Amino acid sequence: MAVGIRTHDLRKVYSSVPPMAAGGGIVARTSARGSKQPAKEQIPALDGLSLEVHPGEIFCLLGPNGAGKSTTVGVLTTRVRPTSGQAWIGEHDVWKEQAQVKRLIGVVPQRANLDFSLTAREILVYHGAYFGLSSKIRNERADALLEKFKLTERGNQMVRGFSGGMMQRLSIARAMMHDPQVLFLDEPSAGLDPQTRILLWEIIREYHQAGKTVLLTTHNMEEADALCQRLAIVDHGRVIALGTPGELKASIPGGFLLRLRFANQTPQLIERLQSLAGVREVRAADGTGADVYADRGGSLISEIANSAASTGAELSDVHISEPSLENLFLHHTGRSLRD
Image 1 (cartoon, rainbow, N blue to C red):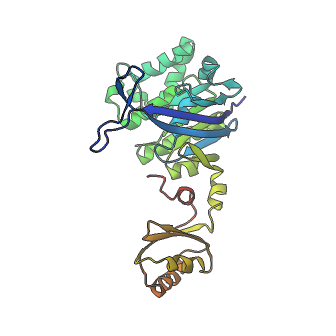
Image 2: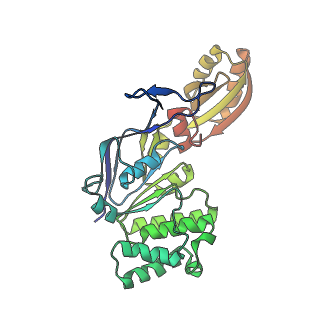
């Protein structure tokens, strides 16, 4: 039976000493005993995040670095204790039933944490032993996974000599070793070459076809579009959009995004752009440009240039893009997914 994932109003606040202030040093506070200590800054990583991942679904958390994706995975995999809120894997409360949850999940962290004193095969076999697999089963699975991930020839070699892509493949193989019902992959294709990325996508799809639930985090729009049945776009610890890739792209006003840059931009220009046929929404950007959401793309350029000239401005740069997850993120946040 497939296992789902739920979170309700997850909040996580980290405390850290702030960096040296320019010219002022570290801000200090006085303790009860009179000694001065560095003040701690409250950094919210999750701000009321609620999600439901259906059993047997490939679900994606999409967002830039620092959006809260890895913290969400940390909470769901028992590595990060939330400040408040709840999380469940299937019917198990993550923080009340950690042992049961750990048997249901496989985790691929953002950075490989392999034991460099072991061979690839030993890493898989020992992982199977942690989960109580018999010697016969864990050896059979280790051989099968080494073959699946194209690592058979390197199975008896120490992993310290492996490339980054090989380490990532082995990390995923290790997470699958005990046949978990839910597989978490945190930025699985970061730094991988195109050939390895395609292999990884094929394996994820195959695992999903076996009835497993997969949750992956990424800031790669192509990956989210290719793999995920549904996705949540996350920023500043909150879900800002949720749905299938097709639904989310269709929700962009007009579909096309024209990113414009002007010399001598004027307030009158924004009003003129808004009045053009097919334009759904205009947003001024940094005082020198505008983002125009419209039903058409290239055919608008001459009209935009004429509008600019009539208000004393000059069109200096144009970038047109069709409906995409990147455009959706720009629409909600005003910045790139890669910022």
